[in-house]
Length: 120
Image (cartoon, rainbow, N blue to C red; front, side):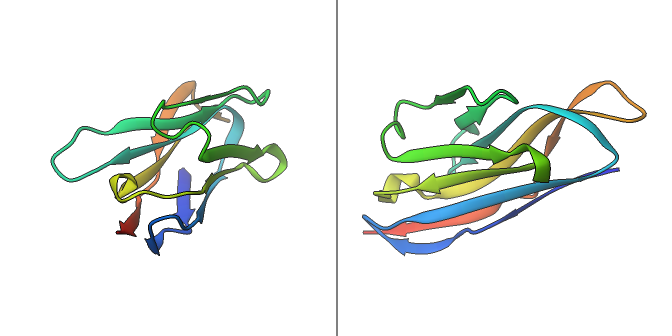
């Protein structure tokens, strides 16, 4: 059994900052890529940022220069530092992890989502 638990969402004014955290727990053998996705009302879920176990990162063009993804492999935790937030960043943010458990192969796991609302 694997759980991804997100925290850190909330309401912030435009130009402000938030830091999201996502901790993976359970019978985890190894974690490959971890990432953050978001879904705004009426829109498809989109990749915001991803990070490999080696620390290589990729970002959506819309967040480059404003968001920073990082991870602590010892804690199975991924972070998303969001600066200079804009109203269009408003969405439910989901954590994703591509991982192996002690009893299964490589699977995708998702967190329950955390709401980020940016007011203008």
